Image 1: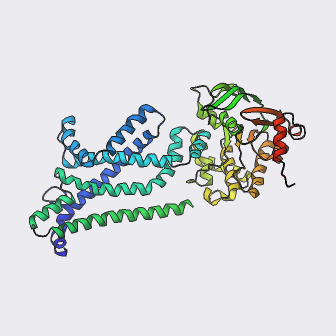
Image 2: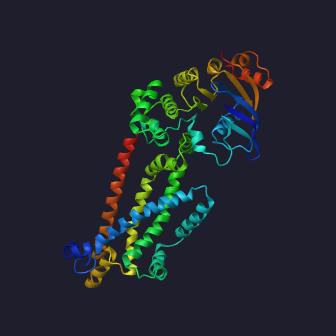
Image 3: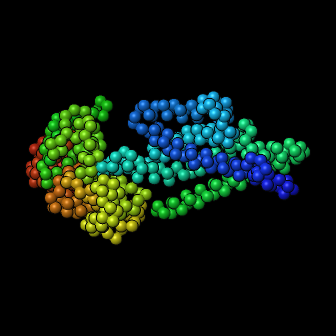
Length: 227
Length: 244
């Protein structure tokens, strides 16, 4: 396995770059983090809609969340790949296609985390904020969401780790991310699948473990500040 | 200042407030007492519309606060409301708890709000706790911070919903003394409480409620010494400790 890492580390890291398109681990990271950064605000908006008193807002978003939760990500990727270009009239590249699928899919999941986070805050907090004269938006922004965010942190990180792993489905539409690169190396070598895919597994594991540890550290630090 | 006109409130089929008519004058200190489930908390929560009403009207300085379309937030900012569970914002420290609303609603600069808040914290005896977080304070201290936070909006009216019921016995006194101080400074107060000693000393008037209706309105002297309604007589007999 060491010899494979030794020979192919650069290919694992950046794909064919700079001779070809960027790929490998860097593309996986880029895709994962961009997806998270875009999905989070979407998730907050959808989550707020899920707890809204306005039915015209709550009902469609609730329906959307249920549909997405009952759908495999792979299907959303297919939709994005075949359906998006026919709607927009532009042929989107694989990165954008995968990004759109991930943001849409994770936005719906994050919405549920945000909803649960908001509903987990004691009712008295909202009542108290409103009785001081703050309006609903101010109460949400300054009182409810900051507290909810702290409670949501473990679930959010969990979702982010999931997102990193979900980028591997980019393989299906030919996106040269980490799994795709591993598969190509395996095709070249033919006889070393255990070592190649072992390296792949190790790369994902280290990436996700690192993320979990950072989150744990943040959690500990925040709880120290609070008490 | 506050006028109830034939107010009725239902929780499903349960009739929580029955034809409540009442007038509370500016500067008056009114204590609402009665057994659990008598509608005391519901009554006080309708005054700033934490609870809706099903019929009747509640006027605050002549304006119907349950009318749809009024600027509810502006009304509420003029009414200090104290909860049994304090409801301090746990992610903010004491001074931030006291300055959030003034900065966003009264347009103060953070520095002005801070100066005002420190004066108020001094008044409730907690100036040294300005940078503490709620979790670091005792229940009595938390409730006093909650009073300072409410005062920071300079409300002409304060409502207390059982402010000492969640406190350990040794902390009840410190909170009641702060409330008495407010009463003596001429603020209009409505307080739901089981602290009969406090009611006797501080109240201008006592309202006795049972099963959603105000059964007796009296001065503390009349209420405790010459209760008229049989239910009030029963209540006063029941709350007397069997051990004293």
